[in-house]
Image: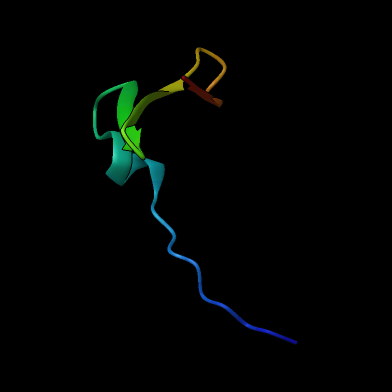
Length: 44
């Protein structure tokens, strides 16, 4: 069985006090947001 350790980041570290984080991947900007229901949504 292949055990690969993936990077894990706590959402509190990623967001801090904010509700929105912008992520750029291959030159494309995405928005990661925390909803009112405390769920995550990633949009382009």
